[in-house]
Length: 324
Ligand SMILES: Nc1ncnc2c1ncn2[C@@H]1O[C@H](COP(=O)(O)OP(=O)(O)OP(=O)(O)O)[C@@H](O)[C@H]1O
Ligand SMILES: O=C(O)C(=O)C[C@H](O)[C@H](O)CO
Image 1 (cartoon, helix red, strand yellow):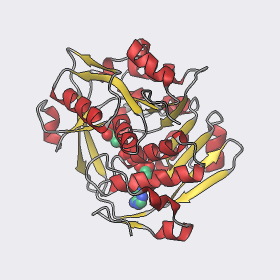
Image 2 (spheres, protein in one colour; image 1 turned 90 degrees about the vertical axis):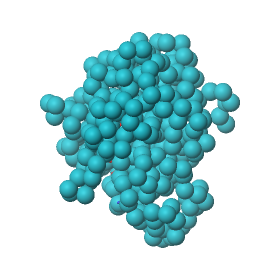
Image 3 (cartoon, rainbow, N blue to C red; image 1 turned 90 degrees about the horizontal axis):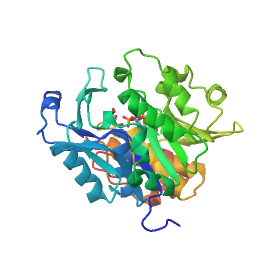
C-alpha cells in the first residue's frame, strides 16, 4: 500500500529538452519535449500510477519551465526541483544514423544539472523525499555529466541506506572521452537492481554472460540483462535466472525504450510482484515507447501481462499502438 503524499520512487538525473533536430540544440527557445533518462522513467512511472518524484536542477529558462510543467502535469512530484538562476537547461536532439540507429547531439556541458552535487541531496525538499522513498532510480549517465554529479550519484549509492536503488547502466559512449567504463561498473555493484543492455554489458563489463556478470557484480540482488528484441533475463544472487521473451514490435524509434523498461520493471517491484511479471512489465512499457517517435508514452493495457507464454511471445505491437 502506497502512503498518500509520499513518493515510492525518487528519480535523480539530468533533465534535457528534446528539440526537433541537431540544428535546434543551440536554440534556447526551440520547441521541445521533456527528456533525459530519469525524467522519462519518472513520466512512465507516473503514467503507470506509481507515486514518483523527480529531483534535480533546471535552468531558469523556457526549457526548464517546460520540463517542470510536463512532470507536474503528468502527476510527478516536482517539489524537490531546484532552479538555477544562471545556468541553462541542457538540450539534445536525435537524428537517424546511416546504420539505422540514432545519433544523439547534446548541448549539456555547463548545464544547471551539471552544477549539482552531493549538497543537493541535503536540501530538505530533496532529503525528505529520499528519506520517505522505497526506491531511488539513477543511471550511469549521471556519472558522466560532471564530477559533482558523479559525487552525488556515489552519495546516493553509499550504504547504509534505507531505500533500494535501481541503477540503469545507460552507457553513453560520447559522454566518456577516455572511454573507460570502470567508474560505471564500480557504481553498478553498489545498487540493488542493475539494468544493462547486452551490448552495454559487453562494453562495460566485458561480457553479457549471466554467470560471468554475476561474478563481476556480487552486490545487487538482481542483475537484469536486456537482450533487445529477443528477451530479458534477471540473474538472482544465487545464480538462478528468470527469463521473459520480448514482444514483437514494429519499432518506430528506439530511444527511451530502456527507460520505459526500467519504469515497467520498477512498477512491478514497487507493487511487490514476482520478477517474471516485472520483466514482462518492462517489455510492455518498452513496446509502448518503441512505436512512438518520442522518449515516453502512455502504457499499453495491463491485462496483456496475463497472457500465456505462447500468446505473449507472438503478441505484436504496431505503430498505431495496436497489440494483436
Ligand atoms: N526490436 C525490438 N523489438 C521488441 N522489443 C524491443 C526491441 N528493441 C528493444 N526492445 C525492448 O526495449 C527494451 C530496452 O531495449 P534496449 O536495452 O535496447 O534499450 P536502451 O538502449 O537501454 O534504450 P535507451 O535509449 O532508453 O537507453 C528491451 O529489453 C525490449 O523490451
Ligand atoms: O542520453 C541522455 O543522456 C539522455 O538522457 C537523453 C535521452 O532522454 C535518454 O538517452 C533516453 O534513454
